[in-house]
Amino acid sequence: MTYTRRNSTDEQQEAYLKTMQLTKICEQLHITLDPIDWQQFGLWAPVKVNSIEIASLLELGKRDSDDILRQVQIKLFAHAALETLHSRTGIKVLMWSPVDLVQPQEFISLWIITLETDERIPIVESIENGQRVYEYYPFDGDDGQQLAKLFGPVNEGEHHLGDIVTIKEREREYTGEIIYIIPPGKMLTNRKYAPRGYRTTSETANMNNVVVSRYIVDCNDGFPHIVYQSQVLQ
Image 1 (cartoon, helix red, strand yellow):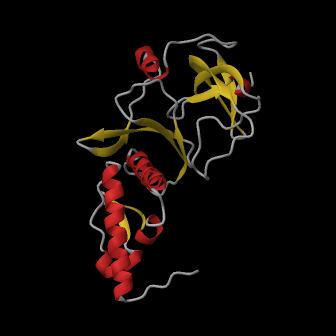
Image 2 (tube, one colour):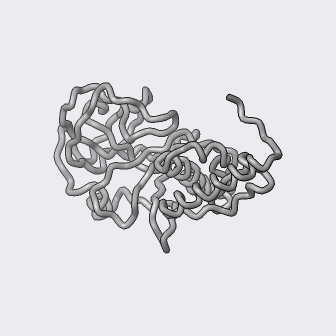
Image 3 (tube, helix red, strand yellow):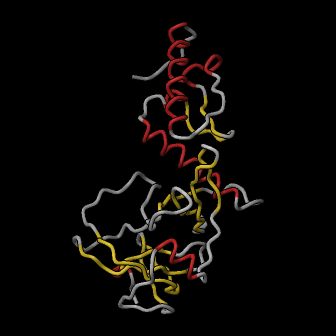
């Protein structure tokens, strides 16, 4: 049923209740919302975090806490990535990819934000003073200690450190240098893809629950690719 704005006491009451409910959920998620102007806009009031619009009160009011968190993450990860471009504007984000790391880390999570320019920008999500913070993560592929802290001890594989290889991800090919080999992981077939634009670090699984080597390949596009053995073409 299409929602139609009504200048009525019922709508105002509903908007107020959803504002209170959403604010409470976000507080539990360590997210502080900007003031929601439900008095003027009713259920169509924009919901913002640090002046960044997330969605309407009507839309977020229908979601559970996990979906609300993901909506906030998508917006704030993208905003943090685009802020690193400084004067460049109008560039769109294509994908949000969480990175599988050894734990514990100093931050909650590390994501790679892929732009339409194919740049891969690492952004970390942290809790500071009780609030979620999203900021650029300075990555150095030549820093062995940083690689070990993120991915664990270096391993061995069919290919070796320093090898120049071509890899295939999402039907595209990239060429780069293997800078690290991490513990083997399972490739799963028949997995459901995440929503459009929201991807894991590897999607081209074609082996059935087989444990295979994983490589970190630097293709000079911002953050290295983490790929399985079967994704290495040469």
